[in-house]
Length: 370
Image (cartoon, rainbow, N blue to C red; front, side):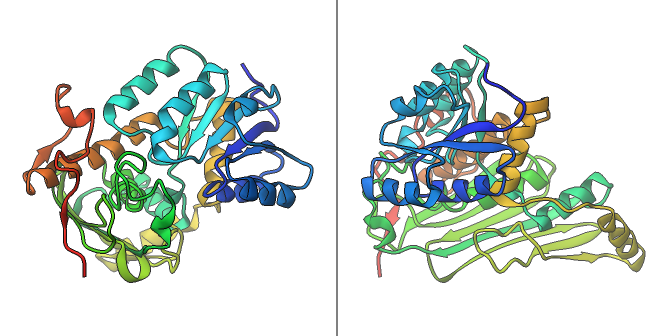
């Protein structure tokens, strides 16, 4: 196995969202050394190489990245339809993987990934960096302290704006390459935060539509969920908002919690609003939160925890089971919408065809453009 103490050699493949990975890695120079960057776009590759100086090789092919013995871990920031094959390729080379969402394109693909992992010692780290924010960390801390245990309802909103310029990138907006729309690409982060707080989903009833852009995949979503603990949640997402906003609101028997971040892409960061049911609970909340030490957020925290996991065996920041929970919810949303909102229970049966392919049989959902 590669070294698991000191700085790890890392390569970033795909220099779109990969730029955010590089920014985080620059802040963690004691933990990671960027050995290579890789992209098929020569202009983007050259610009990134200039930004990094002489610290990293600029390569155009994954094979060249994997041939470098100084690379311990590869961050895959490539289009979704490439993920499974590329993860397998990296694992076969004996290197660890950090993979952007969606980790893979179906639950069956995730099962195949688990089999590939069993063949060696390298690990896969799914990316859900948005859950690492001060506000959400405070809520999780309060739950660990005994608060926010009896959930009532939650509302999760992902209201962003994406137009023709965004979808000019060839792989976006297509089932074969993006694998889904707002449900899979944009709202998956907020939905991950929902299950991170409330636990597993029991049933899903959803409706999807394409009302903003002339694309194959959906860009509007509404869903009602019953969680395994009996609480209820509503999901709302669109790519046709006039501005980008995200909001998470959780109501428990003892307190109400609402995200208040002005950054739509980092709703988990502070400040969050915590409203206690009584003055006594309010005082206890303040005392509990005062004991919480500061921590990094976003990609920096994700990569910091990945390094700690590889170095000393601490739990990974996001587990494969958590990635499976996110993909299961995606699958159930698509299955319910394809059945005109019929409730779908989780976990899905092993023989359910949606586990192999969540794409709608008709090629898309109701389309009605302005």
